[in-house]
Image (cartoon, rainbow, N blue to C red; front, side, top):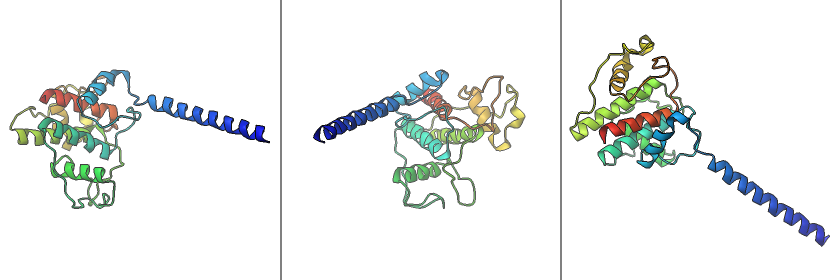
Length: 216
C-alpha cells in the first residue's frame, strides 16, 4: 500500500511539473502578431507606448483598449500625466470598476479623445472600426498640438487616392484624410481604407507608433 501511495505521489508530482512547463511554454508564445507589424509593434513596446503585451494582437481592438493606447501616447509625447477624476462620466463605467480602467476612460474623456457612444454610454467592450480609431487618434493629435503649441498635422479631407473613399463616414473624412496625408494611415491592399472594418490591436499599435515618430 505504501509503495502504491509513493508511486501515486510521484506520478502526481510529474504531472504537476508537466502542467507548469506547458503553461510556461504557452505563455511564452505570446504576444502574437503579423509579420508586417512585428518591427513597429516591438518598437512601440520598447518606447513605452503599450502596456504588457500578452495576447494575440491580430484580434479586434475594443474601445477600452483603444483609449488606453491613445492616452498612453498622449502622456508619452507630452511627458505629463493626464489628471483623472472620481466623477462617473458614463453610466456603464461605474466607480466600482477596476480603477486603472476607470481612470483611463475618464482621462480620454477629459482631453477629448472620446465622447462616448451616446445616451451616457461608453460601451468599453465594443469593437472599434478603422474610421472610429482614426477620429480618436486625430483628437489625440489635436490635444497634443494645443498642449505643446506645436503643429504636427496638416488637416485635409482629400481621400481621392483611395478606392473606397465614398465609404468613409462624413464625420471621419478629415481624420482619415489627415492621417493618410501624414503617412500614418497608409490603407490596405488595393488602396483601400476599409473605414467600416474593425481595427486590430496590432494595427492600432502601429498607427500609434507612427504618430509617436512624427512627434518625437
